[in-house]
Amino acid sequence: MNGPVDVAIIGAGPSGTVLGATLARAGVDVLIVEAAPAWRWRAGGVFTSPAAVAALRRAALSGSVLDSVARPIPAMRLETRRGTAVRLTYGADGGGSPAVGFDRSRLDPALEASARAAGVTIRRGVRVDGVDLDPAGPATLRLGDERLGARVVIGADGTASVVARAAGVHRPARLPPRIGLSWHVLDPRERASDDAAASPDARLVVIEDGYVGLAPVPDGRLNIGIVLGRSWHDELARLGAGVTSRRALALIPPAVDDPVAWADAAPCDRIAGAAPLGGRVTRRAGPGWFLVGDAAGFLDPFTGEGLHRALVSIELAAPAILASLRGPDTSGQAASAYDRAMRDRFASKDVVSWLVQSFLGRPRAFEYAARRLAGRPEVRATMGLVMGDLVPASRALDPRFIAALLAP
Image (cartoon, rainbow, N blue to C red; front, side, top):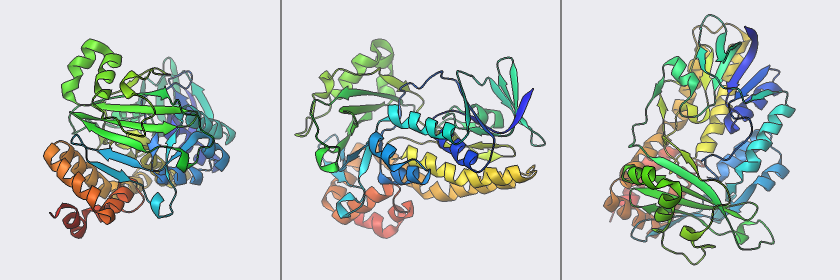
C-alpha cells in the first residue's frame, strides 16, 4: 500500500482545491484525486451573492483573478408564474457589493492552480472505487489495483460521495426527484466594461413544476440553468435535453432587458445534467474522515447558495482536520466539533429553505408571499440578505418578520 499521506481529498472541484490549498499552507501533505482527466463543464451554480466572493478572498484567491472570473450583477429578479417580480439586490442598493455571475471555466482552474502553487499534489484521471475507514489507523483508498493510505480522508465529491457511503451516513434527499440542466449561450451585446451598471439583472423564473435561472457571466455569455420536477422526466427521457429545455424556456415571459430570445438561443457549450438535485447525510465527519461542500449535504439551488456554503464548510473543517492530525482522534472529538459547527451555522437556513420549497409546491401560497415581498421593501431587503447568507437566517424565522411578510 502506498502512503500514508496526511490528507487525501476526493474531488478537485472548488471544495477540494480550496480545502487542499488551506491545509497545504499549514504544512500538511495533501493529495487530491479526481476522476475527470481534465476540467469540463458540468451543471453547477454560477450566480452567487457577495458572501461567496468574500469567502474566496478569505481563501487567498487574488482580487485580480476574482475580477476576471466574476461579472457583477445588480439584482436577481424572482418571477412567479402569474408575473409578480421580486427584485433582490443582496444589499447592493444600500452600498454593499453586488451579486456576481461566475465563469466556472476560469474560476475552477484558477482554484486548482492555487492549490498546486500551495504544494498540493493533484492526480487527475484517477477513480476512487471505494474507501475503507479505520478509526484506529489510516484510511485506505482503493484506486483500481492501487491502495493508498491516508491519515484523514475528505469527501469533496458531491452528493453521491464515496466517503459518505463508506461511512454509512449517505441518505437520499427528502425533496421530490428533480433534474438540473445547465449551459451557456452567447450574449450579443458588446460591453465596454464589466461593472454592475453594464450588466442586466439575473432572473429566476418559476415555471410549471420547475424553475429557470438566467445569469450573465464574463466573456459575453449568459448561463441558463433549469430545474425540472417529476412531471418533466418522461419527456426528458423521450425527447432529450435539447428539445425539453427549449420547451421549458418557451414558458419564460419576455422581459425588456432580455439579450436573446431564450428558447431560440444556440448553446455555446454542451447541455450538462445533474441528478439528483439534493442529498443529505446523518453526519458530516467521524474519526479519520470529513465531508465538505455538496458532500456535506445539499438541499436545492433555489435557496442554497451552494458555493458559499461549501466555502464555509472548508473554513469550519480546516481547523478540525488540523486538530485531528496533531494526535490520535479515535473518539472523533475534532470531527464532532466540525459536525456541530456546521449544524449550528446552517440549521436556520435549512429551515428557511424548506419553507421556501413548501411555498414553491403550493403556487397560490407562493404567489401570495411573492406579492407581499414585492410591495414591502424592508421585508424584501431582509429576505434577500437571508437568501444570500449575508445575515443570520434566523431573522427570517422571527415571528415579527413572518407577520410582516404574511399579514394582508
